[in-house]
Image (cartoon, rainbow, N blue to C red; front, side):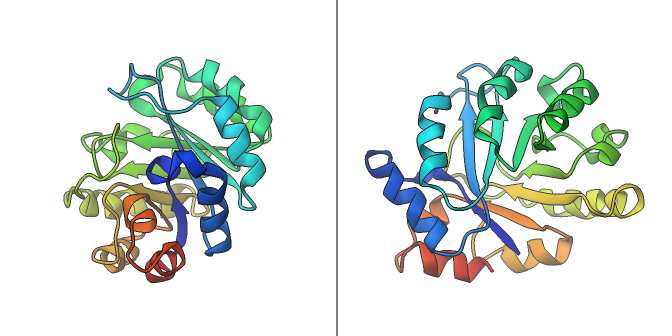
Length: 213
């Protein structure tokens, strides 16, 4: 299991230390939630802050766009050379064009689905992406409870991926903990995003990441 702690739950007063702690603690990616206050009812961070995150991180960035005007935000964050940039299929009118743009910038493209969006919505895009991110909470805020109906959705997506693009990863974001990690792994999840579980774990971030792995 690959672990991508979300810095949405980090201490922003000591952001560099918070990023360093998860990298030293054994994470695989640093998950960065970018919200614009339009696509979701929350406003988070822009490229100036993420640039400082990139300087502190010793693991690749995994940037999750929850925004309108995806192409504009891709241009903002591409210079930071993240491993992944994911965008929501619900907000993109020309997803194939955007996927090509992201890959052309030397970044792995990924598509995100909200809890209500079926995997079939991206069937004809799976061949062109390196990862699909399934939201297991409604996007916009950290600390929400896991939506169990996402488990059968993972299994449906996994079957599609194995047929179309076996190298494509499945990432899940929202309410992930040591309580549901085994079920997620068995369903076919490759990467988990965890914010509250990692940063608020009583034994520290290293123990939290270890528990998920």
